[in-house]
Image (tube, rainbow, N blue to C red; front, side, top):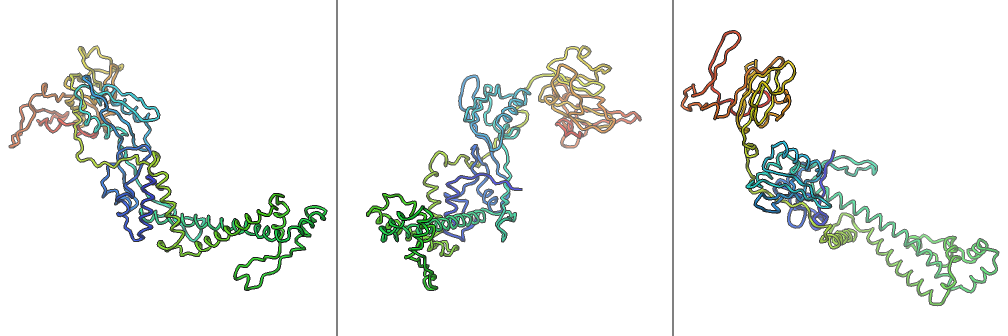
Length: 499
């Protein structure tokens, strides 16, 4: 498994040049200055990791990049501001994100937003119309927590590294310096292969040019042979017979000397394909100039290939690699395609909010049935006329504020507490209570109590130790036992398992 984030071309090239300039450089020194700042995602966004966190990720090859979309207040009006999202995290589906935000708005979980508009074209633009006096920072903080506007990118710098077998790579988790080192040596292998291929092509061309140079000294004789021949094959045979290739002595072979008084089949074929205008007197100078340049280039390549591949400072091939990296920076580094898209922004202080900030404060009624169905409505004038499933009956109908809680007591002596806003709003039968809580086998709700202070009164307990608050509860069991208990511990919403 591997998960390597994209990076900025200019920064990577600068880091490679730093490594070439100082092979002993440390990982953290590559994550500084004009070298690598951090990942650079094509969709932009804000990276909220600290410099220390990023350096740790690049040193160990693993960690989490915290990525946020970009939003700002674009328009202000008396009816409400407009919060505009212009960048989204890498890998997030925009349509799915907009759908999630709309779901929160229309389910009243994000009441500070009036409307969601997706006005995106080639660029991202999602407008959130806020209600009057709504705090845009709190809305944004809520979106970061409950929508894909903030995501994590789990970095895993596992790579296939070269082994003795060129067909097989060994998986290994690398740090930044190791990855750059392997890449530089890969570039060296590519350059070596390129130079070797160029050398073969040059030697082939030099071989042909040497043939041309040879026949210009015996041009009349060559023309005479061609004119007396029966065809191309006959002419080639006669020319090679007239200019046979002599074997080189061992000393000539060591000096890589070329036979200057013979033609082989390849040279002869090129001569017979030669256009007539190339037989002009001035053309021999063109051939000789080209031959001189080609031989000079061959000497340069042989010198480059003979260099020590691990000597970063004096090796000619490493100098070429440096030039290519600098050329990439100059060609693409300052263009729109080469600019950094993701900004590294460390929040100075996170905006704090409570769940109550996003609950519309309004009165409501909650109805619980004997069979364990529950629903919330703005007003229930007559519970007996409310819609119920066949054979079901009303167990309790309580009133309160959407920000207050409702306590549901079960037959097993457990209290389940939920905010009234979290009870599904419905004009039908409602929803089973089991969707909100985790019941045991045979457990059922036997009583409900609104924890709204206007209805319940003072349930606070005396911190000095007085047990009985002004308002408390009485419970009785089927076996004839009874107890009194305070309600304050049950005022806050419980987990699915209850209290």
